[in-house]
Length: 597
Image (cartoon, rainbow, N blue to C red; front, side, top):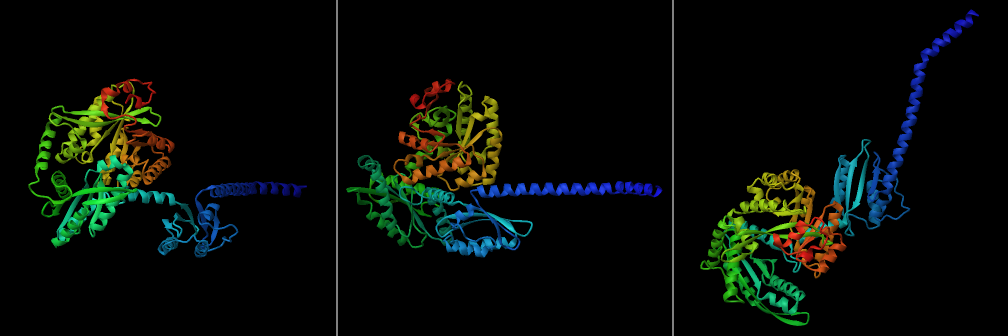
């Protein structure tokens, strides 16, 4: 009996001693089971995400062999079902793609991708396939020595970027380089000519009475005349640089050359086509043209002066001897004197109260007013209404633009705050304002002074604000945005880097340049570009307003493709504030703005 008691006593103490270990073992078993269940759930979620993704996905093990992929990857590279892919190396998969025609156009792309994999570093690369498609590959290493990658077909995006890049530097009607490209070429010539003591000419050629051609034969015939003139000039001005800055004018820049005969040869060839007959749509159209010439360094030592003097020579030739090629002469200074007189008048215009703000409505595609853009007008006491295209550049040249823009901002905000209908007000700023003024502080003080809600103010800028000092401009725009003010990019699509600017800064709105809207009915490229911009805006969730809407067909196109807002003569012309007083006062207004205009 005593032995039995001793045995039970011993076992009970043994049980007490083993109890913690047993508990730990049980907890470990439960934890492992829970981890395995969680791992299986996550694995199932990962497989579901990979299967449902529109992007191609693949994962390689530490041995460099394919372990996992999805259906989208096969679709991107057009790999038919039934292919044995599991366990294949990167090089073997390249051979599979090559067999079905999904091969990289450039060998260096494959080499770069292979090198990034070997380096064990993350990489991003867009490759072009032989069939013209573009695939973006994002490759990331994994801790176990393997790597995973996503593959996305970005062909549409690449084509849109290429189209934007082309449009930024080319005229749509003729396919020639545009104004921006022209200035770039002159800048290059200036550097070369200065380095080599050479000379070159800037030629401005205008088609005589081009408006009459449009009126008599129609705009399509006018465009055909421009295209044919571009072709003939291209043959005549070689090896010069030919551009179409706009309107009925072409520009030619001769190569820097020390021999005067090289320029004279081009002048002679141009004179031959100054009176030509074009055969357009079964009709013979007599087309006359006139050219003005300035020469570096005789007639100017910078781009602006050379172009201005070539223009002066052109205008003088059109007034006196159409159909000729005329050199600039120092006696052609009447225009310069007139310009200086206008500059003097401009200096006192603000003080004398000669400026007035006109308001142009902005509306939804259904005609509901959402705001107004402010447009400056100058009532000259002698000349009458002076075009903004004339006095705004003068104000920028003389440094008066800052004071004028400040007056517009203060006046417009004070006017808008009194409207019962809290419509937005859009104000334009010159790129020079961002260099010489503290624009954010100016806006802040005006908002405090007038009491206008920041959300009602919209600042419109062009890419000129961003070109010279990008980082500084972005910092200024962020300060403005921090005030609660909205910022819109004006003339979108017509500049160098519009797409990159959208990536760099969160604009509240983009305005499609009116040159594209004007050609919606007549130019397929313009329609494609506008459609691409609207598609891009939807992807970025970025509101769009189209300016220059003048016809119902343009409005119908924009509505059909989801444009948010419109502005133009169809909606309402720029008018003094009294003209739109009913819209500004009626909070419940639902009638079309066009009816008021």
